[in-house]
Length: 522
Image (cartoon, rainbow, N blue to C red; front, side, top):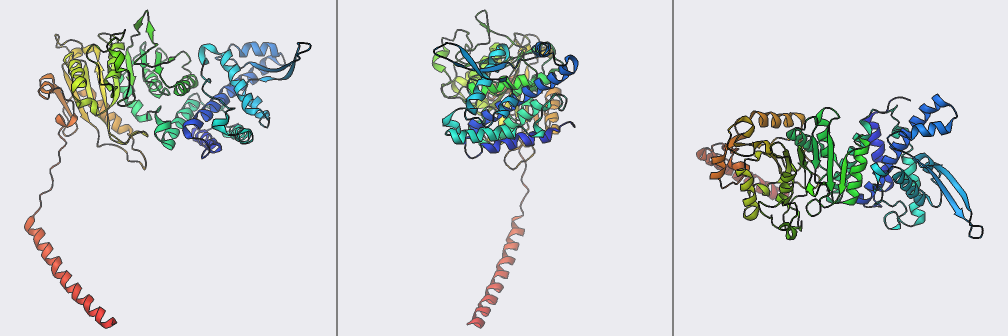
C-alpha cells in the first residue's frame, strides 16, 4: 500500500465523529473518538510488527508473541469464560487478542459496548506503567452517554466501521512517525473549536504553544514541566524545541478525562516516560520529592484564566510555602499558578513562560503586591501582548509573561542578571480567521527576534528599566510602555462645510423633481 497522507488521515478521523455528532455532547464524544483512535493506532502497530515477525519465525506463535511483548506495549489475549456452578469449572466462551480488529469482527455483538470496555481494561492492566488509569473515565457501555442498548450498539458498530477505512490504517510502514500524534492534536483542536468552551478548556492553539515553548527555550538535559498541562500540547511542543531526546517531561492536570487524553497523547508521540499526574496543582501537587516540590529547568503553562475558588483558604498554611509573597484573591487564581511555577523553577537558572489574561498585568491589592515583589527580585524578563480571539474559549487578548531565575538578585549588573523588562505589543499582528485568529510563522519570528535583541521598536516594543516600572507603580499594562497611538488625519472644517452646502443644494433639486413626478402620477 502507498504511504498515507496526513490530510487524508485527519479528514477520515474527523469524519468518524459524524457517528455521534448531534446525538452526544461534543465534550463527551471527543473521549470516545480519541480513545478509538488510540486503540486503532496501537492495534495497527502491533499487527505491523506481528507480520514482520511472522516473516522471520513462520508459524512459531510462541516466539512471535515473546518478541511482540518486548515492544513498547503489550496487547494481551482476552478470555471470556462462563463458570458452571455445579462443577465449578470454567468454560471459555470466546478468546481473542485485545485489539481493534477483534472488536471490528464482533461489531454486531449484542454486548459490543461491554466488549470494548473489556479490551480496554485488559490493555490497561497489561501496560500499567504507561497506561494505568487512562481508560477509567470512559465507558463504551454507558446508557447515559450513548443511549439505550439498540441505539448504543448501532452507534458503536458504525464507529468501528468508520475507523476501518483505508485512510485510517496507521501501520508504521504506511505512516511517518509524527502523523498519528499530529492527527491526535488535529482532532483535539477541532473538538475545541467545534464545541466551544466546554470541550475547549483542555486545548491551547498550536501557534501559541509554539511561541511559549520557544520563549522558554529548553535545552538538552532539561527537566520540563507544565503544572496545568491539559492534553499535553505545550509539553510536546517544548520537547520538540530541545532538538534531541535528552529531556524529561512532567505535568499535572486536575481534570481526569483531560489527564487521560494527555497520557495517550504522550504515548502517541513516543514520550512514554513522561510523568503526568492527576491532581490539583494548587492544593495537592504530586510532583514532589522528599516532601518538597520537584524543581525544573523550564516551567511552561496556559493555566485556567482567573480561576475562582482555587484554594485561597488553604494558601496561608501551604506546606510548600509557595505563597510567601502574598495570597492571591480567592476569585482569581492567576498569581497562584505563577507563584507555584516560580517555586518549582530551579534557583538561579530556571525559566518560566506563562499565558495570562491582561488583568494579571495591572490588578492591584494582593496581586499588585505579589507582582511588585517578583519585579523587585529581578525575576521578570518579558511582557508580550498577543492579539484577541486566538483561543476557542475566549476572544479576549492575552499576554505571555517570561520569568528568568538566572536574573535573581540585582547586585551584579551582568548580562545574565539584566535589570530591565522588554515589553512587546504584538496585539495588532495576526492572521484573521472566520471564527478565530492565529499567528503566522513571521509573527512568531518577529516576537522572538525582538525579545532576544531587547531594543526599542517604534510602536511595537520598549525596553523598560526598573526605575521606569517603579514610577508606574509596578503596573505592567503594555500601553504604559509601548506607545501605539496613531495620529488622526487633520480635518479641514471649511472644506467639509462647503461639501455639506453643495449636498443640501442637490437635495433641494431632487425633492422638487420628486414632487413633479408625483403630480404627474396623480
